[in-house]
Image 1 (cartoon, rainbow, N blue to C red):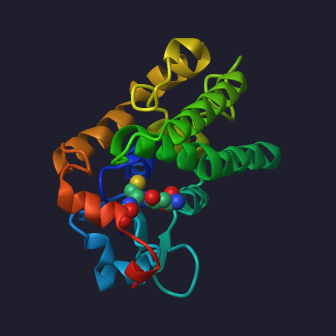
Image 2 (image 1 turned 135 degrees about the vertical axis):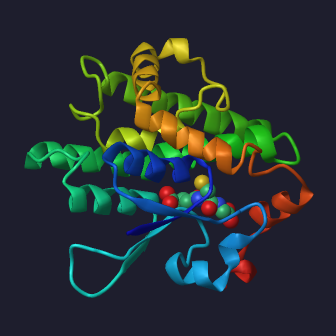
Length: 231
Ligand SMILES: N[C@@H](CCC(=O)N[C@@H](CS)C(=O)NCC(=O)O)C(=O)O
């Protein structure tokens, strides 16, 4: 059995999308990041970076007892390797898939995240920061749009590379015109139509329909962190 420590956010969706797609049984352990659950000692023992998602696999395929893991990209790779699903078997395609997974983790996720921050959450409007991250999000959209020319998915069949990217392509929140990126638009619609994606987002709606940053308390918890809040 697998525990998924989760809150409905883009990085959280990645893991519910994988688990719903593959049918791996799991138990949801809710970590309300708006209330500070990410600082609970039990959670920090699994995820010292105080961020969701995290998993604990109580029946790993490797010796040494339960495997606990933080960082969504590492989790996707671990789960794909364990199940043999949603990652190409052919070594060359496998590395392509891993490469795009890293591209999401190091580029699309952090840059789109900063776009969200400066567009929607920053207490003051900083034009330079908005411009910087909106333009970078647009650049990354174009990179993915080009990659998808002549392809339904990033590396052939649907894979963890698509799962990692999908929750972070949110044109309406990132001030992007999706019509400028026709391949990306088609890819997004294709993944949105998958029953597993719909189940994953339905779980999210059931857990919490509100945005994670919805009041002063959540703003303080999520944006008040520095070296002194690390436990
Ligand atoms: N690189 C990490 C990022 C995880 C992350 O930023 N999680 C956010 C939600 S999407 C979080 O837990 N935030 C809580 C906080 O900022 O305290 C991953 O991909 O797992």
